[in-house]
Length: 168
Image 1 (spheres, one colour):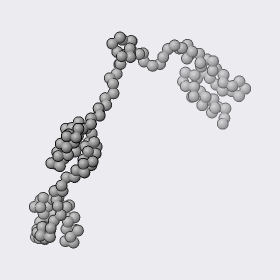
Image 2 (cartoon, one colour):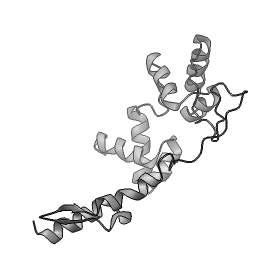
Image 3 (cartoon, rainbow, N blue to C red):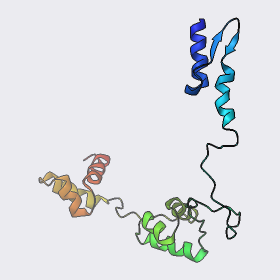
């Protein structure tokens, strides 16, 4: 490494206030005493903001200048509340709504539901042969997948999937 490069790195490592320090092979770091003079003149001074004065009413004697961090308190649901949560879910309430209603996180709601093995009944049970044939006739007569789905209470993609699996 060249001497100039080493000197430049040395100056940059010392910061802007220490530009007078230079590196020479024979004399080593010259000007270091000058570079250190300023920080020693500031001994006893802190670069941190001042601490609020001691007050007798605070438990630590130090007044807090910033509000404490906000954290959600742990809320453990009672068994009766879990029963109510499961019943509401099976009745069709959304997980996010239940989380807000019971004051817990949505993953907590899902964990309770999983522990109780609560699964909503499917609204679109498999079609029997007669229903599939009726839907296929509607589609063959020119009805769109949206129209067939609306007639049977399912989405158009569900109709398409059922036709595909049935070979229609």
